Length: 55
Image 1 (cartoon, rainbow, N blue to C red):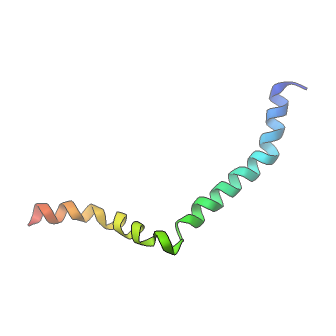
Image 2: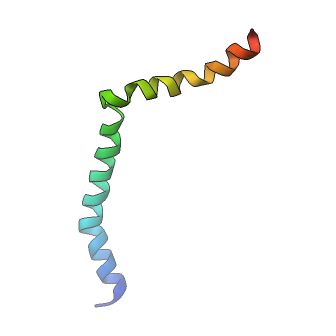
Image 3: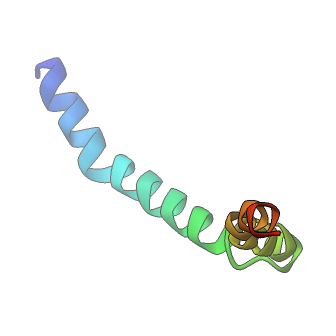
């Protein structure tokens, strides 16, 4: 069995599971209550400079 075949078999099984877990982790992170204040600040940050320019 060649190296390519071994890597392909790994990617088809465990690689897919690992990517699925990473996706669910990163997606779930955005809905955590503890980081919602930081997300709100980031969403409103584009308007901070506008307020300084306009007055």
